[in-house]
Image 1 (tube, rainbow, N blue to C red):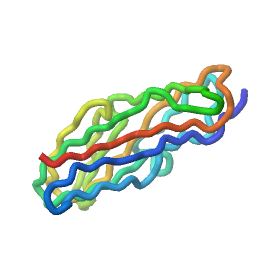
Image 2 (tube, rainbow, N blue to C red):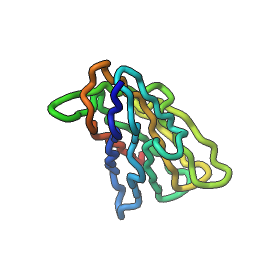
Image 3 (cartoon, rainbow, N blue to C red):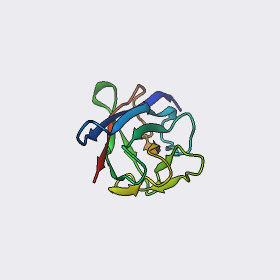
Length: 153
């Protein structure tokens, strides 16, 4: 079996800014599957401290109501037009406020999710996923883009 070198999904962000630009959203780390073997699915959990994708956001205050929505690809693009399937399970996203009393919340990245910032005004969001390479998957680097939109409402 051949190894397919580092797979990355670039994380991009979009924040809907209230007056005064009070919402801050930053991409921290790309979702990275690393080397993947042909014909063998590879998973990254949102709890993975190195390979999961990570975003950070800060809201104006505790009590702010937010909505998180992802635009997720279903394929990664590789060398010579090659493609590889990528999928996201119901619990492949996780959010946690930065306060010591904050608890992690797993959620479905394919659905819009709403939260109230109850313990802190800022939080991290982590994203996992699964790639499914074909038995004859061309070797190379595969990428695509994930967009996370945070809206205050």
